Length: 552
Image 1: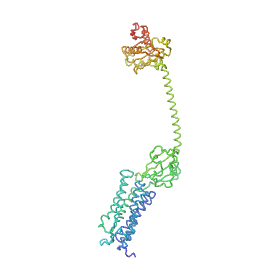
Image 2 (image 1 turned 180 degrees about the horizontal axis):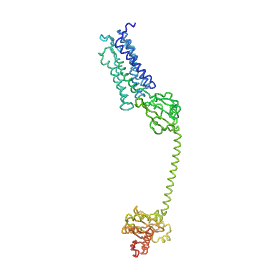
Image 3 (image 1 turned 90 degrees about the vertical axis):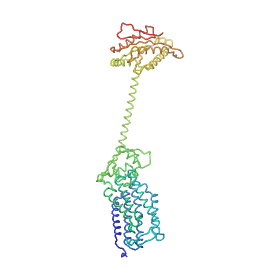
Image 4 (image 1 turned 120 degrees about the vertical axis):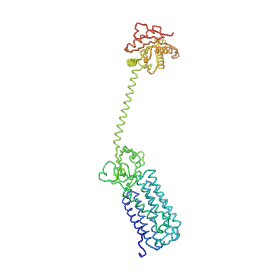
């Protein structure tokens, strides 16, 4: 039986491809903790199966036997590209596409192809004839209509893998450029070699280049595995201390898949799944976005993070992240150190609330002090400053005027005949007139002026940086405005006038008592002149009678 088989360069090439594929499969299977490693291992096994079958096909010069071995090679040829696409999906973090619906859709063409291959003798869909080429002594299968459907399907699978790689490298940037470009080159070159036979049938007639294309891709992947850590996991030295420590430890690779953990991390993150290693962490921890966002800070998670109970008590976890590197000092992943600080956070919150309460009480005390101070320096009836405030501010105003070389005018005024108003209309009417005068002074004074109720019906106004003539015009305006008022209290007209005395100080040598005494003398002279007038007292003019102006 075996006499019909002969060792040929073509069969030896297929044996070499099979051995190489098995080596890559072994390397990938050793790293089978991740889904992409398993997909790669199965893909290389499919390459090995198709290569061995084709090695037998190229070792005979019998069209029937060649057809038989070619039919046996097709399961591996069909599965190779499908498994490679699944490998790329997992590696580029598009594993969400690998679901029952997608798998069923992608299997339609492979399943139909298997039927076309198995029933080719009856329907001739994959190849329509088989002849032996005199140059290569290989059996040439003339393609049938379904063969081109399978070629188009393979081309689309290669393009899909290229699109996913390009998006992950240059758009989403979830894949490092070095590893991503390696996979992209492996996909393009391997696919080009594998499909070249369909477009250049005259090159080595009867020899299928698909296994060689897969071998080329496998060569790139093997180099990436051993030289770039393509499927490498971060080696973590484990000890019993890691499993017993109260701090959580969670180690992720560059694609955020769990490659190591301890029970504390599983408890803190409420990971209930039994399958953890190799699974993306965002599938295991519902609140992973909150944890990842809190590098060097505190993550706030429900006590049962994996449950849907939004009313669960909160757990506060301090998050520390440590970058990991491989032996070549290239980034290899991250290690998260998690510490439950819920109790410490509760103490800090209690202290914060106590401090807030203390600050609130302090603010209330300060507000009360300000209110008491305002009450101490404000006249309750008129709202103007009182005599106490005047005695505080007057020395400062004198000193400021002295430094600035400015005139300080002091006006003392009172209501004429207030006693008569109190006797005839009542004290409430008198208070009403005092308030009317306070309102007039508030409206017709500057922000820098100081208006005070000195006592009884007497008022004092300090006019900084105001000359005697300016003070005279200002006080005359007050006098005229108040005289022209015709207020009514309880329907009864109430009328009064003002007497005003002015003392102006240009040198600022006088004491506050001297200033008030001078203004008081000027007021006295205004009253002596018949009231409803303005009198002026000039410092240093003690023997000169004060002048007075009035309007009847």
